[in-house]
Image (cartoon, rainbow, N blue to C red; front, side):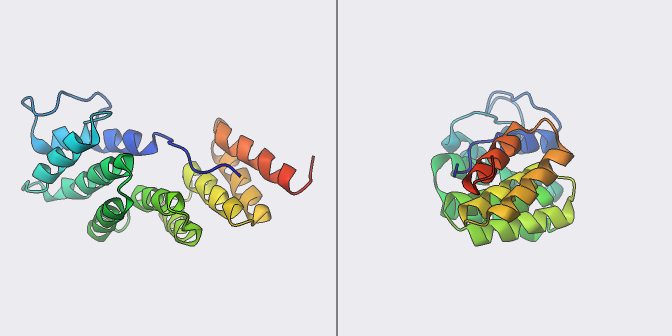
Length: 182
């Protein structure tokens, strides 16, 4: 079964939270929150530095997104413990943010904690029942646990929500093949 890949979802969501997908140069005139949230493909250590500075901001409404930005940088460094800690903080500050649960679920899956991943994807789905990536990623976690029937159901739901999600089609086909269904 395939493992979770780099979907780019974290970057896209952070850009949307910041209001733009075009990153400015780090440390050049933008405030620390903008530097953190719009860092895009900057080196993880630079993003971590900017996000840590941004946490001192008086703009408390932006702090959950700042934690998400720093968590993404930790994920890119492979520091899953710190990433989970930052996702936990983002969830504590903004418990209705589905994407925070979905992203934390990805980290659990990368660590091989498929039960933790499934639980977080379920929380994301409760908050955003039309989030196709949460269904697709939960399907992958089910598949990694050997629960192919549940995986196929989740891939099918993801496809219904987004018929242009090739990973769900691919993974559903792999799951059917693994079940001997051709």
